[in-house]
Amino acid sequence: MAAADRRVRPVEVRALAPHRIWLRYEDGVEGEVDLSHLAGCGVFAAWNDLSFFSAVRLGPGTSIAWGDDLDLCGDALYMEITGMTPEEMFPTLMADAGA
Image (cartoon, rainbow, N blue to C red; front, side, top):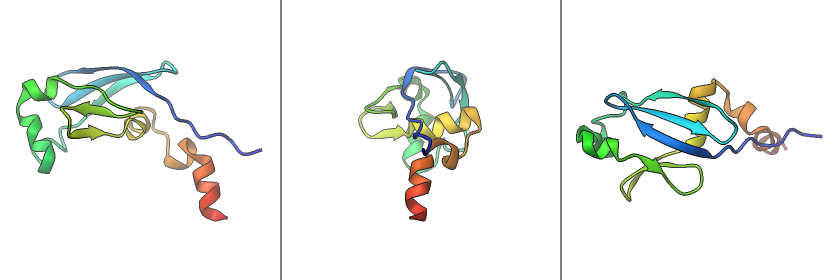
């Protein structure tokens, strides 16, 4: 039997020091993610306004959002915190790709 994909929903998010966020997921995993490498680039220039960055919130599904037009994938952030690979997080996706 193939392992199930791991879709874990974030349940809490907070802005920290400039361009860092803290997340907690429904399975108890929590940690900080440094987003400073994105700040100031393209759509992420909006984060130069620290009041905008501080307004981070839980978005639809597993997303982490700022305003109405800027979000990040909660699954990618979960992998960043845990060190999991896409193959570990989504084994059925990888199995389907090989079929």
